[in-house]
Image 1 (tube, rainbow, N blue to C red):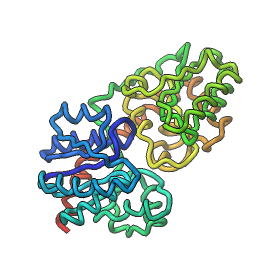
Image 2 (image 1 turned 90 degrees about the vertical axis):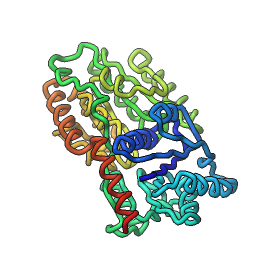
Image 3 (image 1 turned 135 degrees about the horizontal axis):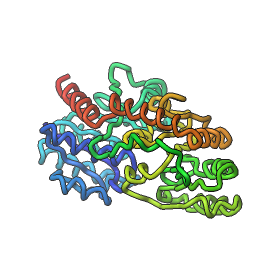
Image 4 (image 1 turned 60 degrees about the horizontal axis):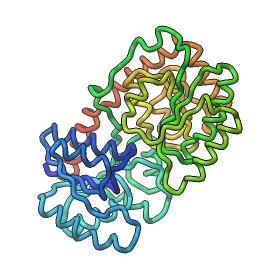
Length: 360
């Protein structure tokens, strides 16, 4: 089967990482994959693994995007593409119209809580619509009118061979614990509340260090300034470090004693949580969106109300002060990842959707 995946760019992010992972896995399953995007630092991984990447400006929200449609149609014809898979709205419109011209099967995968307007409706127009969580399935059926018979639930997955599982990590209490917060720097990710929570934590344990890892989202530079100002205001300069964008998330997760996902708004899934589970790092996360589908409160992690820095701090302290509990929760999350969130499962399920869409 010849498959075309189309995505705005391959610079960083969960959807982008998922595109890379899926492409490599589909190739291992004997499929031919072509990826179209506007480029980015992650392209090299595709090319190093013998996967063709074609650079086209499929990321620009402007009338000039119409001129890209014939180019995508030509890619479909040249490479005898059987199915086109779109994971983002603007490239999805381009791909959808190119598929109309070439009479090619078009499928989508929905990763977020798209705003309810015409531009977002393209994600409902796939012959089959893949969703990354039950909460996104509900969004697509209730707000976009996608019939349940068209929806296929496929959770994100990891190649566990790329993650070193540290099962003895919590056999003793850490003298200088590290709390991680990973995600692009933008208000919806809740780093402001996380810093406030860390003030409560450090009031109880001055040796705790927090690492905030993530690049500044374009247009959100003022938010980064606010975060730095808050750190100074709360006298946390010795406890909180900003690392910027880092590519080796598994390595960082191994160093942490606890991962905190502080998002303020519903997220479709939460890839960083399953990465933490893969390496054996305990998690504390906002109880919103698709996160409770990964974390069972008190069983495989701790959940807190989104935006509640007091409850967030209580969860962090509970984990840092109870290594036995942290070990149990981390082990349970690792088991859940092994059972539900592997890359093999994701790739095989996605390939089944492609085949189903082509045959019916």
